[in-house]
Image (cartoon, rainbow over all chains, first blue to last red; front, side, top):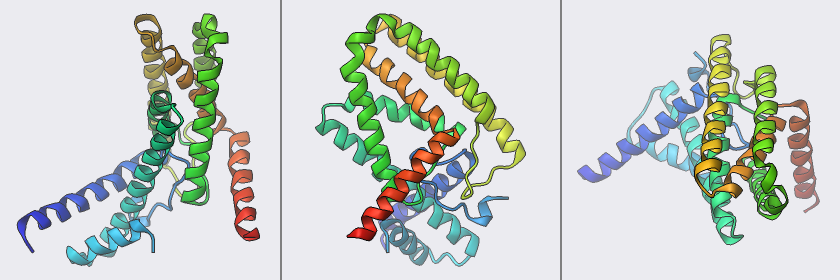
Length: 43
Length: 207
């Protein structure tokens, strides 16, 4: 796997993890849909 | 399989993530990220087609700040959510653009009225908890304070906008949005979303 692809995948993983944590810390999703919060983020 | 599930699955496989908790977090993050991006871009695209881009842009920004701290009613399905967002924001923006001429002398009064109503509703209701996302007592206390601070910041920005710029439609549209978001914090708002969900479910069944 070349370096750029690895970097993009790492960046995407970090972005999605950050999105999960931001959503877990806020009241809800800003649009009208809220997915089920996983147990690991309820701690 | 949805796009978010596919994206999360790809990342889990490529990064060889074996920890169950990490996998859950990544799947949740993907669902939140893709539904938010798709909903926002879809709404902005339709707003652009209908010539309502600027008010809808600021309405979504107001909604982002308010809902992240105060919460609100939610649809059971991401597609229902998208439709509800599009319909409600287009209608509110259309209302703002077409009634601004009748209300331009009363904008300060409307601004004050919306702020007062919102302060009362936020104080009594925020943050609204959903079964999908329970909140701890500490989180509730922090979010209530943050929602009141967010509302005051928006109000100050509106006043500045009204005094120093010519953005009357944007100020008016964001005031209507604040009132709509307050409605979504109440039992009436939950009922609206519930009936909207039921209506769409019936339409799906009849097909």
